[in-house]
Length: 447
Ligand SMILES: NC(=O)c1ccc[n+]([C@@H]2O[C@H](COP(=O)([O-])OP(=O)(O)OC[C@H]3O[C@@H](n4cnc5c(N)ncnc54)[C@H](O)[C@@H]3O)[C@@H](O)[C@H]2O)c1
Image (cartoon, rainbow, N blue to C red; front, side):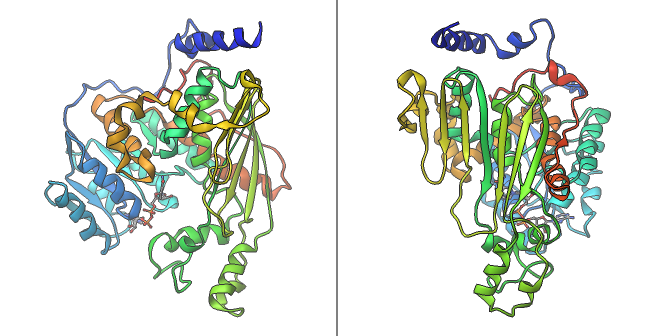
């Protein structure tokens, strides 16, 4: 088959549904089943109304057919801010659950809640999502969904046992350029994909430390909890922003799966350097044994043979980069640093072309339809889509497009990278969270 024939074959196969091409005789199988009737109006509650939780709260409050009767947060400063989001958007104040770290369990006893959005520090994600599912409600959990392998399995086991879905709120899957690349991959622009690269490369120095270098108890914002992970864990603690989009492109858990990874950590000097620059050579925090390597590089091998480089890089002064790269037999795109490029064999393959031209051509239907509405929401518009997908899944009583198996497989990079680094970059195998069903599950379709 010539390259152009193969490309048109790929296009045809995609148009007909790539799943049908992979497994024509087998229907999609998602073990947890949702069989209830669709609802015009749903009641969404929230656990964690910090910066991220209030973003979801606002988008939910602006959505037709959404009632918000309750939320839970233990920070007294977060509560009036969340109530204001509600009243500013035409809702009444909601009932608040704030009496201790397990107050959410009290909220979950209510029978007038359909779904719960969790936007708390990472160590709370899984136990809260498990409690939400056990209470018979839809769970949506911020990234990453789980910290340990046991937690990954807890999410999967609970979803299967209760029949309740658990969505990972990975907004980057909805970025306009990322969705355009997904379209390009599915329509064969890059031929057969061989290699991808992604990451979270973004200085979080002013997130991990307040202005006075405070972190942990008594600090504000994410410095209250996120910084502890840099002190205690040498791991890629935030893999899903990069990996979620690549997983969708490579049909992970849907005809393909992550097989194993190896991870390597650089030295850990960035936080100490920052503390000394801001607080002086002898600042006590500079003497702490910071553990997280400043640049952590993992290489994942998939069962279909692709390799994926995932980078975690948050301790050095640098601008944001998704470090995105997709390369196949017929072309390549990458979003390194500030720029975006694409080169395809059909056009010579040796010169970078303007990405925007290709983005316009392959713009995703979701963006064509809702782009204007989305633009005002967070992170360049992608947040609109992720909150919307959860609400729609609850209304339609269906599995969300990014389901519990995605939550587990993408989040598993954290414990596996930690184990690999600790063992001198030894390979670590991913469990098959789908219990064999990856062979017959249909590819993700963002609608
Ligand atoms: N997808 C994205 O783009 C994105 C962006 C920012 C944050 N996040 C994720 O969202 C989550 C929250 O981040 P954030 O920036 O809002 O952090 P934050 O610290 O601003 O907010 C967390 C909130 O959770 C509350 N909380 C903590 N423990 C609680 C408990 N036991 N019960 C009830 N409430 C509790 C805190 O009081 C706080 O208000 C994190 O997982 C983070 O990684 C995702």
